[in-house]
Each structure stands twice: as structure tokens, then as C-alpha cells.
Length: 442
Image 1 (cartoon, one colour):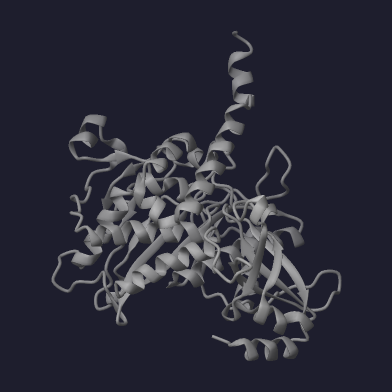
Image 2: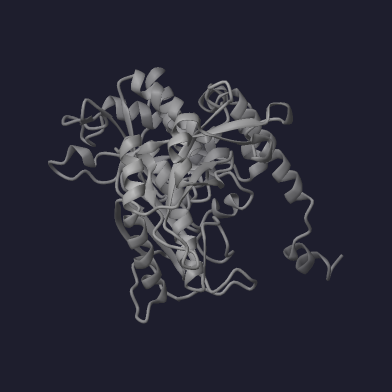
């Protein structure tokens, strides 16, 4: 990774005139401030101050000053220019208080604390997310897609495929490692899969993918959205997260002797994910709209269960590739691509580590299709249900000490307060469905 002097050299070589300093608020919205390249060296030494009280979740009015400190390892050129302007670059930042202390409500800092906990236990945390999203002709209603394709379809002329290819080229120019892209199940729904990386690198990458995907679409006259459920009648968009722990360069989830090749560490980690799944859903699925995706019949997980192959379960253990220990991992299928990736990776990791710390016992894998089981059959198997609404998710989260510890008390309180406000605003609305259903008869 480049140090500060190397970044300054790269900026000169690229004829960079401006550098955008990036960070996220509690909801995972990308924020930025732009400096001239001549101020870059000073920014590395001193940071750049901003009004934290204007950023969701950062600070109260009486402690508003915050400082963005660039992370030299995240430098890259932006692969476009605006109206013939000079080349620009970006750097992700860690957020500090003016006294030098790390902010307790910086999402990047929350993830760093979780990664430090894993490191203290001897583990590195690796993640590989799959981001699904939709292309539309524009953002006005009614929404109109660009194609009628289905899973893995490639029917020319495919405008969306060209958009995906242009997006991948831009992402690779920014240093991202993309495994592949493809058409998803719903019409005009697509997916970008990133190569397994450490969680901090991957959280930064998720932010880049969302920005670049939307930017390329807009520059071509279209609109891309990572909204979990923009269309009622088709599948929503998820962000399935493949994950594993590594120790001393070896996959800690792998066991040569276990029939499933899943080690005791892996089994306890998985048990932690399952036991705390309902508590972390307010983070992995943070929007009112997120729960329109988490319903039966649209290939999204609803029940807290795990399986070796079955894709209807919350956690899937992909098939082991013979002779490749690194292929052993677990796919957590609840998150959607509109989540805050820093907080999502942090709470998934902490849930799993809690299972290891407390020797949780993993329940048996589900062999039947959980959607086709009766409520009694699910109860007999001890299969719980994910929250059905943001309100329910908040209520469950409020009682979770694990989640409070994972996020830290300040971030926990800010997130819960924000989500309660969102729910209150939502429930005050009168929807078109209500008018269509009730107005003619009431």
C-alpha cells in the first residue's frame, strides 16, 4: 500500500489538481470535501476540519468540530472528468475529534474496532459481497427497466451489459478486483461480485461500487439504484456476503476431518451469526424498504436457518472445492446493498466472534425447504424468523447487548434514534395501496 510520499508522487504523475476526501455518515451515505492538491501534504499531517453536526450521526451541536484524516492506502484517481476539468483523485478518511481522539460515531472506526477485536483473537476477517441492483431508464414513475432478461441472460442488443462492462473498467481503473458481473433474476436487475478481501478494503470497495455504478449510468442517460425493493412484483436486491476467518495465513473455517470441512471455529462462528441474526438485522437491513424484500416467495431469506446448499436459508455453506481449503466459507444472505457496509461487516463479525467466545452450539443444518415447512415444523426445528418490519427490527435491537458492544454505545444510540424517526415518518404516510384498497369501500 502506498505511503504518504508515494501518494504525493502519484498525484504529481497523474497531474491531479483536486483531491476528494471521502467518508460516510451513520447511514452509509458517502460524504466528501474537496481540496487542492497543494494542500494534500498538509491534510495528511493535520487533517481537514468540518462541521460534524451537519452530518447524520457524527456530533451534537455543542461538539460539532470534527477532523477528516486521509488514509493513504485508499488513494486512487477518479476515472472520469467533469466538463473537461483537471484529473481528480480520492482518499477515504478516518474521522477524529479535534483533540486527536478517534470519533466513536465514524462507521469506518466502528469496523476498525471490530477488526482489532478479531486480531486480538488471532483472526483476520475476509469478506466477498455480491451487490445486486437495478437499471432504469430514469428515476421518474412509473419505473421502466432496460431489459426483460433473467438470470445469466445475455440477449443482444444488451444496453445494460454495456453499462456493466463500462462500470467494471472504471472500477478496475480505481484498483478494485472484480470477479465477474451478470444479469440477475428480475428484469433489468444486475450483479457485481468482488474478489475476497479483508473487510476494511471491502467496505471501502462497496462504497466505490455504488458510486461508480450510479455515475456511469447517469453519464449514459440512465439510472441505477441499490434500493432493496424498487418493484413490488419481482425479486428485490440483496448483498450476499461470503465470509471467513483466517489465522496465520490459513483458513480457520477449514477442517480436513469434518464431513462438511467446517472447523469448530467455523461452526461456532456460524452459531453466533444465527443466534444474533435478529438483533443485527436493523444494521444489515436498515431501511423501511428493506423489509419489502424480506418476504417469502422472492428468493430472500426470512427464516433463521442454515444449509449446505439450499438457497432458501439465511446462511449457506457453499460446496467445498476439493484441495482448496480457502473455498470453505459461509454466505450470509440477509444484507441488502443499501446498507452501511462498515457497520454491516462489523456486526456480522462481532456476532460470529461472540459465538466463538461463548462456545455456542450450532443447530443442525436444514435439509428441507424452510418456505414449505409448516409453522409447527419450523418451531419443532427451532427455526426463528427475521424481523418483518423496521419497527420490529429496532425493538429487537434495543434489547441486544451484543449489538451495543459491537457498535459502541454512541453509534448504537444514534442508529436506534435515526431508525425510530424513519419509522415514525413512514407510518404517517398514506400509500397508494391504501387509497386503492380502502377508498372505494370505506
